[in-house]
Length: 141
Image (tube, rainbow, N blue to C red; front, side, top):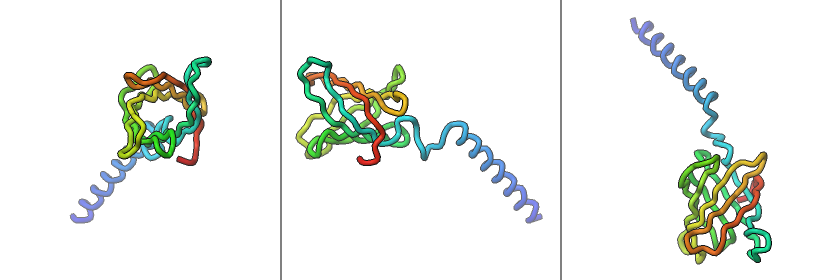
């Protein structure tokens, strides 16, 4: 009798494992993440002729694509938090890290553009300017 119970448990476990593997392959592996997952680096700038200098930015998006981090310089960085998704863009709110002197509040609107990511930045209310740029995959953060 004990062998029958053990066999039923083993069959149930095998069915559950098979279902989980099928679901994971259909939905994509959560360990790999989505199309924005990873570290991206590049330059963002205002419209041509605006006189606004370009800035180097590094953005890291976590595997769940619900947050990450941003960095403009060693003195200006912090976490990102997913605010919304619309028109194919993930809108991430920049928060300043504790102790930094720069202001957060800008929103990075990220969208895949081939192998790169397009970043359309909406300046915080009262911010200096909107900017945009194309970021490339980076290994360094």
